[in-house]
Structures are given as C-alpha cells and as structure tokens.
Length: 114
DNA sequence: GCAATGACGCTCT
DNA sequence: CAGAGCGCCATTG
Image 1 (spheres, rainbow, N blue to C red):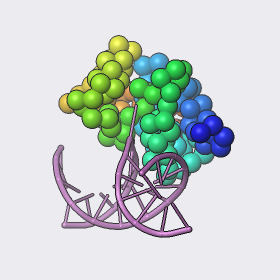
Image 2: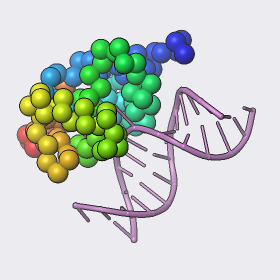
Image 3: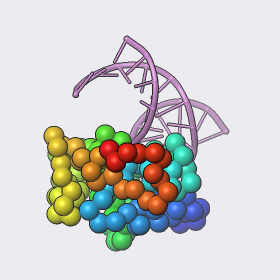
C-alpha cells in the first residue's frame, strides 16, 4: 500500500490547501482533485490516512455540513472540537457552510454571496 | 476474480 | 426537514 497513491496524494494535496477556519465538502475536494462526482474516493482516502499525516482531514465534511463519522466516535468529537477551535460555527451538529464553505479562486460559479 | 462494504452526493417520496 | 433508493469507484475478504 504505497504505490498508485496518485489519486490519494492528489486528494491530500487539495485538503492541505484548505485555509484554517474554512471547511470543504467531500464533493468539493473530489472536484478540485480532478475526480468530479467521486466524493466516495475522498472519504476512502481519508479513512486510510495515517495518524502522522499532516493533512487537516478535520476540515472536510459532507455536503450537509455535518461530520460523517459516528457522533459517539472519538474522531468525530475531535474534528468538531478542532473546527470550533478555528472559529467554525456549528448549528445543530452542522457547520454553517454558507459561512465557512471554502471558496478557492475561480469557484465563484455565480454565487451572490450566499 | 467475484461479492460485499464504505469518512459521499443527488433525487424522489 | 427526514428517510429511502440509486450511482461511482477503490479496497478487502
């Protein structure tokens, strides 16, 4: 499990460029990684992440803005705690994507700000 | 090599 | 707003 990490490496690279205090959805990461529609691959890549990874995986949430990991899970609590520590606001166990959605240059797609 | 599973997303009910 | 169904691809048994 080391070769063919191109796809995974690409995903990690995208996640690494997510600014602090901002969050991105799996679909977004997949899209910017060159894998449109393959949000599952992103989740799979994160699941295989090493504890020593310098990848801010906690900044990745699902399309609803909620943490995909089991709420009672240790990782889920850590993710939320870390996000809140960065200033991310939660609303009913969901991140306010309208306010914290990562917006890389060029992804305007005609948004009026919300 | 086939079958089942999984850190998801979108649409319909 | 919540729940169920279908699709897409990679990893594992």
